[in-house]
Amino acid sequence: MTVGYEAETPFDSIEGSHEYVALLAEALAEARRDVNADIQLADREGAQRRKEALTLVSYHLSKLNLHITTSRRILNDLRILRRLLLAEREGSARVPEVGVFKAGA
Image 1 (cartoon, rainbow, N blue to C red):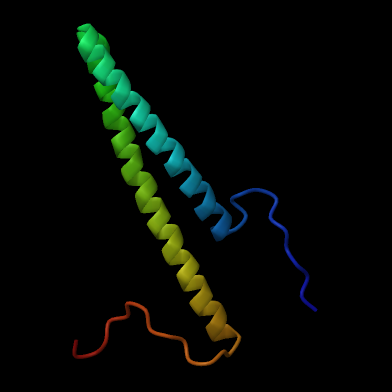
Image 2 (image 1 turned 90 degrees about the vertical axis):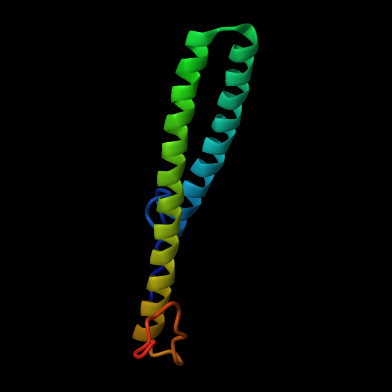
């Protein structure tokens, strides 16, 4: 008898973590749009120091976006690998090859 496990936090499962990171990516995209609009406003107003500070914020948001994108890819890879391993353990029919290096290739 299998007892169902109910996640208590978004990080209790790979799927939950993947979903959370996707939401974080959306919030990050919105923040980047807002900062870019603020940069344009500061430029129009001639507020050079504010524009420079916002440009630095934009740079850091871009770096964070790169990390979030990488995290989403890693979580997706982990989901795929877990599914493959579970299918193998359960003795399911042949597991399809996904991105596996073949001999002689």
